[in-house]
Structures are given as structure tokens and as C-alpha cells.
Image 1: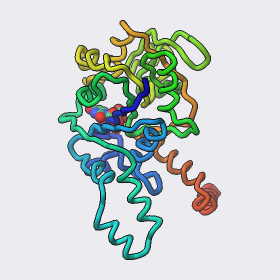
Image 2 (image 1 turned 90 degrees about the vertical axis):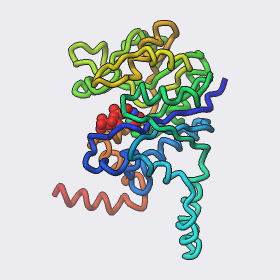
Image 3 (image 1 turned 90 degrees about the horizontal axis):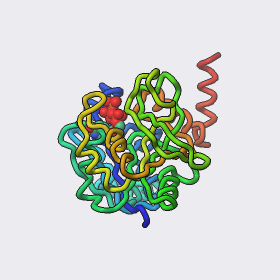
Length: 287
Ligand code: UTP
């Protein structure tokens, strides 16, 4: 069975970027010339997804506007013969079928995912967090779908996280199955370093079976007084196998200030039109 649907939760408050996120979704913060969420949507499409549900909330209208048609802007670009830009703008609105649903209150990632239950139905589906970007030739979501197709079980992308970050992640205890793949024996949200079962953290990519919805419904508020997806997965792995997969690729956590700046600098250095000027400027700063 192909995984064709994806859910992109983007209803979080983004408090780490206040005050910028007071009136602007953090998913709309630009990486050079396009917002973070565009990279996430492009990853989903490149992975074979053809139906995307974005979970939005109060103050997130800019996301819907971004993926919508913009007739006035398009007419302006046409009149001023800016064909290349016009094509870019039109491509954005015709990328894929995007649906929206609102999470009335940001009660946590688990609660945000639960909003997708009706839309997802009985199919396995992908989740891509709206502020995590992963760069690789084979998109991370495609890698997870490939694992899903082989084992027919839920799978989450994991990576080693530094000690000082362990208490910010869902941390897994895994039993190796093959190179880069383990079965989940446990998963704990934001454990103190001393109590963490490992330093392998779940990052923002998942392929889950629809049974996750019932598991989330049974989940009480956990870390940070939020309904945690991690706690739902913990229940799920009690009656279905769940895998952790060490994905290939470079990840940027753009919901974090340092991660965001790293992404901008690295993306600019990879852009031939920007690279030389930026390098010169950076060198002048450290002289
Ligand atoms: P984060 O843990 O990054 O939380 O959420 P946040 O609220 O967005 O940001 P900070 O920590 O306050 O700065 C991880 C993902 O889950 C979504 C976010 O939009 C982000 O993509 N999320 C989180 C929701 O959709 N709803 C929620 O209630 C919480």
C-alpha cells in the first residue's frame, strides 16, 4: 500500500521566536527567498504524497494565503514581464492538493495530529513537522515510506542528539533489527538526561498506521502539560511493532534560533549567486 497522505502540524505557538511569531507563523519564517514550510511541502511531494493536510491555528492565516492563488500579484508580474518570478508564484499555488484544519487550542502535537483523524481515515499516513527541514537526495519521508512498505509497520525518523538537547526530544530505546533500523522498546518525551534510555531522538518525520488516533485519545496530557504524540506512540508500540529509522540527510531544526541561523547560512553558501559575497562578508567579521 502506498502512503499518499501527509499531515503537517503547524499550529504551535513558536514561543522560541517571540516576538516575531506574535503575528507571523514560525513556519513562514524565510530561508532566503522561501518560507520554511515550502521546503516541507516540497519534501512531501517529492516523496510521492499527493494529499496534504496542514494543521493550523489562530494567527496562521499567512500559511493558507501563501499556498493560494494571488491574482493581483500575478497580473502585476505579467504586466512587468517578470516571467520567471510569475512562474515561481504560480508553481507554489499549483504544487499539490492542500487542505487545512484548525486546532482550536495548541494543546500539543498529539492533539494536533488527532485533528487529522477524519481526513486520514483508514490509511497509513506521513507526518512532517512544519519547522524541521531535512536535505537529502532521497527525501527523508520517502526513506520512511520505503521502510513502511517493507515492514508494514509505523516508523519514525531518529537521530543522535547531543547531551544538552536530550531533554528537548522524544528519546527512544531501540533493539537493532538491521543497519540503521531498530524496533522501539520504549519512547519517552523530554526525559532528563540521567533518565534518558539513549541519546537517539525522534525528529519531525513519521509514517504511522491509523491506530495511532485511538492511542492518542487514550493519552493524557504529559510533558509540558501537552498531549504528546510520543505518548501515543508509546501506547501504539504496546500492540504493534514500531520502528526507529536512522535517516540519511542533514536536518535543520528551524524552530530553534541557532538551527534557523545555521539553515540560512548553509543554504546561502550552497547558492552560487550568494556564496562569494557571503563568504567575503563572514571573513571580514572574524578578522
Ligand atoms: P514545538 O515543540 O516546536 O512547539 O512543536 P511550538 O509551540 O511550535 O514552538 P515553541 O517550542 O513554543 O517555540 C513541534 C511541531 O508541532 C506543532 C508545531 O507547529 C511544530 O510543527 N504543534 C505543536 C502543533 O501543531 N500544535 C501544538 O499544540 C503544538
